[in-house]
Amino acid sequence: MRKLYQQRFERENILNLLAFVDWVLTLPQDLEREFQQEVEQLEAQQRMQDVTLF
Image (tube, rainbow, N blue to C red; front, side):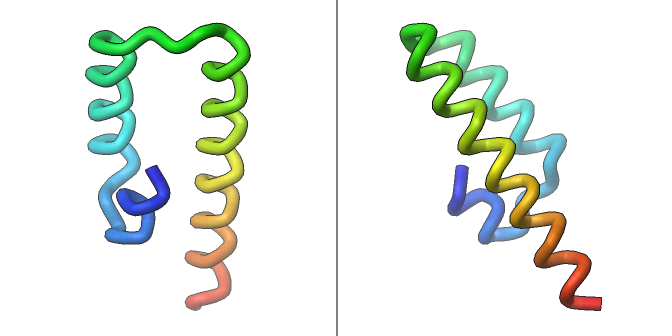
């Protein structure tokens, strides 16, 4: 996930990839929550970087 954001992949493409991975691989509930929190943090960091670039 982090690399996808660093490489400036579009959010829609990242979400499509996540949907596919989610379909193929099922995580236990606690890991799923942890992963979701990390994704949210990455997205927030990415938005802040975009704001500071301008």
